[in-house]
Structure formats: C-alpha cells, structure tokens
Image 1 (cartoon, rainbow, N blue to C red):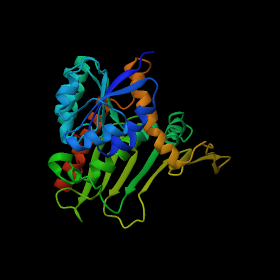
Image 2: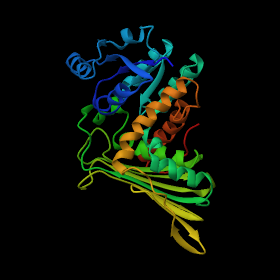
Image 3: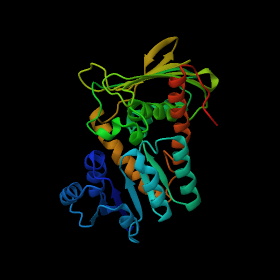
Length: 335
C-alpha cells in the first residue's frame, strides 16, 4: 500500500514530542513537508527528521498536489483559517485540541469538512490510552450498571510555557480550555455522549490575569448523572495530578492508575485487568494509536473517532461553562 503523504503545520512542542517522531517511524506514511511561521524553528526541526521541504506559509504547503493530509498543531486561534484552507484544498486533517476557540468556529469547520468530504479528526489522545479504552468497554457493556456520579480532576502547579495559551484572544480560554476540555471529552466519550441539561461553573484568576487558571464545573446529564470537573494551573502539587472516578449501581472505577471494582455476591471486588504496559508507556503510545487511527480513517478502514461534530458539540458545553461562570448561575447549553 502506498504511504500517505502528510504535511505538518506547526513545529512546536506537540509536533516535536509526538507527531514528528511517530510519523517518521511509520511505514505507511511519510512527512512530505513541514511548515511553521518561525523560519529558524522549522529549519532546525526539519533537519532533525530529514524533512527537505519546509515553508513558513501554510498556503504554499496546502497547494502541493502530492500531500494527502495535514496535521495542524498551531495556536487555537489559527485553527479556523488554516483548517478551512486545508479543507478547501481537499486535504484530510487532524487538528490538535481544541478544534476552535468557540462552538461557532468549530461548527463552521465541521460543516466545511462534511461538505468537502474530507476526514476531520480532532486530537484527543486520551481516547486512545489503553486504560481508558478498557474502562470504556466495562461501562458500555453495563458491567458497572447505571453511572450516576463522575468526578474528574487535572491539577498542575503552573501553566504551560507557551505564552499564547494565556492570552484569551488566541486560546479561547485558560486552564479549562487546556486541561478541563480533555477531561470533559474523556468523560463524555466514556459515557457514550449523553446530553447535558445544565452547566454551572466557577472560573478563578490567580497567577494568570487574562484567562482563568483554576476552574470548577458541574454538569447535569440525562438520566440524572452528575459530573464534577476541576482543573488548575495554580495548585501546589509536586507533579501533574490527573484523576477520574466513576460510580455506578453495580460497580465503580478510577484511572491513573486503572482500578475497576464490581459488586460480586454483595461485596465490591477488584476486577481490574492486567495491562501489559506502564502508565507512562500507555500515554506515549496513545499518540501513536491516534495517528494510526487517522491514517486508517483516511483509507476508509473504519469510522473516525473524535470527529469534528463531536468536538463542536463539546464546545457548546465549553461556551456554556464560561457563560455560567460569568452569570454566576447554572445555564442550559445553547442549541
């Protein structure tokens, strides 16, 4: 099978630590071109991976007829213009999260991709972690019963060193867009995308002024499931702390590390399957699984996981959370 020709737009942290190392090792894909607005960055990074075609203008990369698909790993405010240009050029695209800074822009990208008939996938690598896929199989099979309580948290002591993430006009928001969005997506995916009836939120400013650096949100889902979500760039913890606890009528589970408990003969019992890899390895390999899935979706081997439509629906909840915080009251997600 002829390798797919991939263009990577954005040569920053995620491209250097995930996309380029993984794509460079794949047999069924090749990085045909690398683009970044910073000439020195794109030159240096391309040299590390033997990429001979470089550019500082994404339009020139998208004009190349030999490129089948692009990975867009640029600041969030650029996703709409670059994404629309890629779609117009007929390129399949994997866009790093968040898809856009608002539901309106996410929906525009989704409609454009559907109309053009190209694959639009959003980078949500936590869906491809083996512990999370294992947990989802337990939930979807009904082994934990009806899920009625979910608690999700991701705490860091400081924000990323990427300054654009702390500027609202570029990122769309602060820690909730950075970390909270990932946890919200994971919860909705695990539960098979239930409808959210109401959202309440408290966004707090500590060390960062333009965007929130701590956020607490509460989502009331169909069937009465309660989801509480907390995230912070301002938590005095020694290292990044991610946790997820799920409680059902027949059992419960948590991740990081994975623990699954079922009620057997009236007693909660540990039924956690043994995973062959460490947590660190599972996380690294999630990006490889994500990219392989993207290539398979392009080839028509399977439906796309983490679609633009799912991302747009999720951004409706994100918009609602910011609105709820501003109003100081619970709100219903806008239609």
